[in-house]
Every structure is written in C-alpha cells, then in structure tokens.
Length: 173
Image 1 (cartoon, helix red, strand yellow):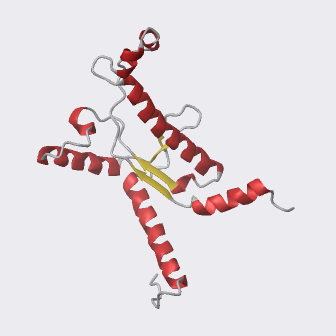
Image 2: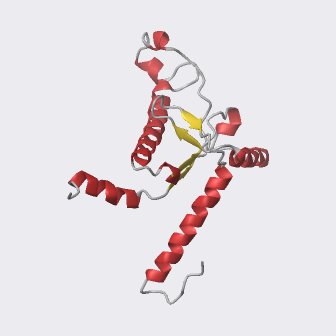
Image 3: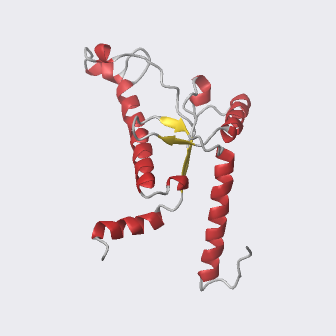
C-alpha cells in the first residue's frame, strides 16, 4: 500500500524530531493569587496589575510555555519517540530562585545547587490526559537522560563528519 501524504510527512517529521531537548531556567511556583470568581469582576486595570502581580502577562507567558510542552509531548508520543524528548524544569521555584536577573554569588550558588538536584530527579513528561508535568516510573534520571542524549548527538556528529565531502576524518566509535 502506498503511504498517504500525511504518513509521508509524519515519516519525514520523525527524522526531524529525532532528538529534542529543552533545558528551562525554571518557572515560578504557581501560587493561587486569585480565583475565577475574583477575576470575573475585574476591569481592564485589574487584568494588567492585581496585588503586585501582572495577571494578563502571566497568563500569556505561562500558556505559551504550556502549549509548547503539550504539543511537543503529543507529537513525540504520536510518533512513538517520546524517549527523544526531554524537558528539565523545576516549577517549584519561588522568590529569588525563580528570578533570571539576580547575578549575586549567593544566588548563582543556589541555582547551581538547584541544577545539581534536578539532575538527580526522575525524567518527567506532560500527561496528555491532564496536562500536568509528571515524573516517569522507568527510573531514568535527568542526568542519565542527558548522558544518553550526549551519546546520540556525538554519534550523529561522527556520522555526519564521515559522510561529509569536506572532511577526511574517519569517525572513532
């Protein structure tokens, strides 16, 4: 049976989507700052700023990240290549830990510790049923997954060098 155009495109996409990694600086812990009943009574200014927060901006930035995560997870799962999508993020950060513009020695040390702890955590994936980021039960840690990704990328680079007419190097495996 001849593949349909959609199947052909998915086949091409599976080659393109062979390995996707996403390291995220982290997001601030989702705190319940307001509820739907409160927001239903807001005027324009309340949507722009409410009790020291910026609800409209927060909704757009968070929803954009959520949509990317959800769709990348959906596509990689549909192509049975979910092991080739890795997102490492800590969404429990609060205060200065979630800020990207505090470059004090103390804060950088704290961020380094957070990164070390993230390496030890289980790989997580978006649950397509509820949209939540949940740890997998296969026992793989982020550190192991990054090592696996590095090996795949290294092998791919060697293969490309071997195939390139611009290099005389033979890859070492």
